[in-house]
Length: 112
Figure 1 (tube, rainbow, N blue to C red):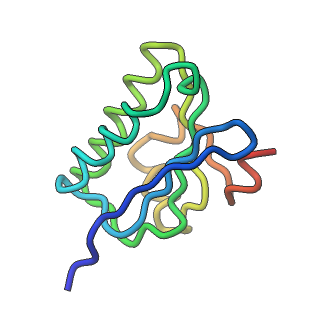
Figure 2 (figure 1 turned 60 degrees about the vertical axis):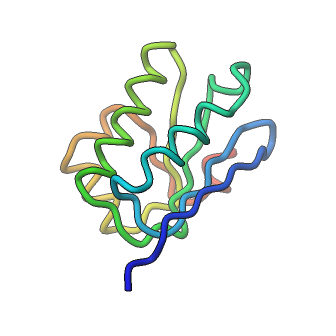
């Protein structure tokens, strides 16, 4: 059975963190974009997407991430990734996202 997508956000050390869990597919698009868009404008300069509980990402999920990264870059904002599994880190490298986002081994590393 597919693991449903869940999302929540928090603010840690004055940095907004979007915690992603489950499967990032086309079904996650509205929730992910709504969560990002709900962050106060003054906090969008630096946002961390935490993948600790992410179990699956397909091409539609990657397209959503690219959409977020593009929106952020257009406004001179920065998105960073944390807690990617070795497999997801390799996927992000293959599709070229590592050229546009900084990737941290853990959320604690991202917040330093």
